[in-house]
Length: 178
Image 1: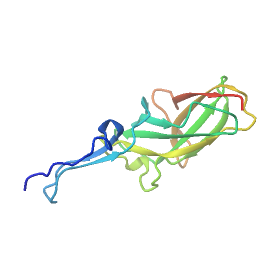
Image 2 (image 1 turned 120 degrees about the horizontal axis):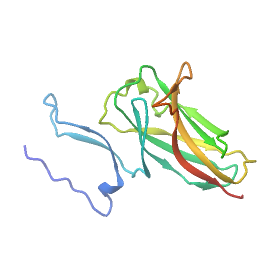
Image 3 (image 1 turned 30 degrees about the vertical axis):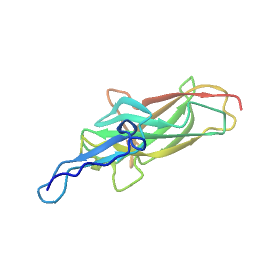
């Protein structure tokens, strides 16, 4: 059977506005073409950080400038060379100029808890992380802060570290006067 042409309106769809998350080759056990899984919004920022076998390949961020008391909303894009020995959690810290913690939000990396890092076994798959909401304290002093993320063991809290680094720099956040 010949392949039918894909009818796509270029005014509606643009491949530059998607993120290829995973490809599936043709399987002789099933009828049909190969398949791709796309996110229909582009990744805002690319990244090259690594924590053990886990790579941060990008992230989305609602803003880099906000007043005290507002929410910083972000999402990670992950890729794994191999599964971790035990499930990991993501910690996200906002640090002041002295490296002191001023706000944090931690949770499992994906919205689906059935996909822990110990099951990330496809190095060709980009995993769309959960959306994190970091509420800035209402009394936070205006200035520059650093958003960092890392992975720790869900049971013990022990950090997953690459070459002595236990967290990745995500972005510089500027807290402005309200």
